[in-house]
Length: 272
Image (cartoon, rainbow, N blue to C red; front, side, top):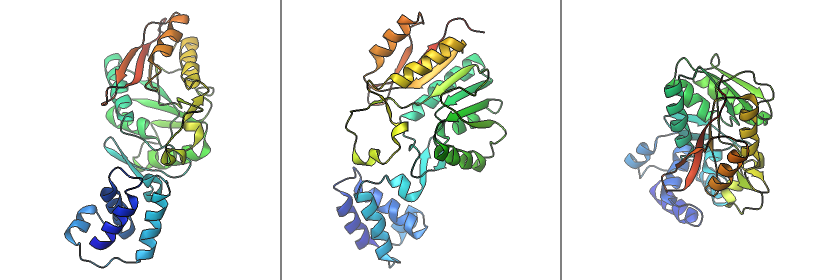
């Protein structure tokens, strides 16, 4: 196994930041073992080496490792993912934390997540707050299928309602909206691995912030008191200006661990 891991790591060096780690993740998936088992049995023969290196080739060709293994870790849970659904990323854990602060402070009982994807944000928030009720929307039937399986895996079918909808067209009254919407400019060059993920979950329009503006408009029009959104690193100024044009307060922006602007909390005027 050790020799195969070294070969795989060399192959993946051209695409992966941590090629040895990815080689081990793929081998653990292939062997249906934990990575710790691989470390303890480096001289075990590798079963079906051809199949293992087929996985390595898929990764070298740019397919996200999460699609290959069918799993992604997020916050304190593991989710089923695959082609057609956005891969939950570590920076979105900050969105969860900001949303949790508002839920706790404002005693939110019912919220809507726009763009549920695999269900990551809604599931973590539902597990944090046992009395919280969530309606989660997405325009993608495939994403909703993954979300439904993940929601069921954690036994949250009674507390997370999944609806196929553009934004909140089929959603009733809620106290808060949380979203990690598509916010990338349509002509922005993405890495090959990211381009495997669905365009509708990535690209927000020519400027990138078109969907963000629609979400702000929706909360303003429906007088939904609280909004927490992820956004692009260069969208702070246009989002702040757009809120000013609507007569809304200045959003409270937050940064990611690298120091980039990554999202905002907006308290909408005219609360119910």
